Image (cartoon, rainbow, N blue to C red; front, side):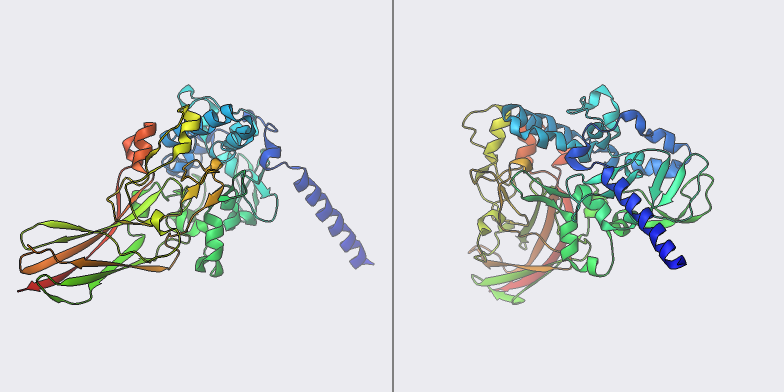
Length: 449
């Protein structure tokens, strides 16, 4: 009898909890269901969580709405495109579901521009994250989180107490699915235009239980709050694609020639191995349509003369998009910019013949695009996966005037957050298209007469 009674009580509790969870709207259904004043301001949290707050202020989470490229992409491209095609308004509004969740939940879309200093500028704030109760669906994506603002703050540690608010353990905070709410994105054509979590699922780290937090929120001894005891604390760094230190060394480079001594007027083949030993997902990831990673190989002879070596073609389908060339792309930017018959801008902006590690996005007309909401298909995925090694070869016929002596070869792997010709066209500040060195490798040959 007691067992039946206990089962009945558990059934009622679970049913009630499930009903409560189902009543919390998520995704597009959550738009306009909350108000700004339901969420604490970050500076309120800073009163106790000073160190964590200061970490957050330097992270992209605090700049997700105010960051210069995000503002330009949103207002000059997404919002402008939706004004010309009203069917895209829900998509443009949805950008805010991840970039400034409070604004989206409050129905304040488009939000005021960053210079107006509204609460939308709080971007992905403390209270937004710590009042997420769960997510809707089997695979989290497109801001599928369930926001439950109030006195209870959720986290990934049990037994926490606060003099200001209630705390509750939520195991979602220990899982990669938490991050997937915004780091998986599907566009109106059903294309996964962001799939960092899905890439992680397919890779080796998910099988070993190494979640996003372990790399992007590493733990160290410290205090999570002024009154807390010292413990292992997750550092709220969120360092990733916009952090030069995180990008540096992502891929290791080794290289060697097929022969060490080469006769004048001869030929040598250089092999370059690139090993992704650092990321739990593909590199680059996230806004793949914007980002460019390329390998630049040069030779320098005894006299200091430098020669550029183009990569050997492998012959796979779509390879033309992975070798820098003198071609135009991104013509669909002409739609939001109001430019008829826009010819586009340079596709790559890096030395012709260099190998590019990317996955191209294509618009409905089959043209390469950086507007993810206008992506109808994807091209070849030639990025470097977690613990994957790619090998590139460079066959070089020695120039007739190459002097005898040592020739040094150098491979440089470079990264840009945004393709430079696009950045220049849209007037994006230069730091978004700066060249970030990832790694280098060298080798040599001796040329004899």
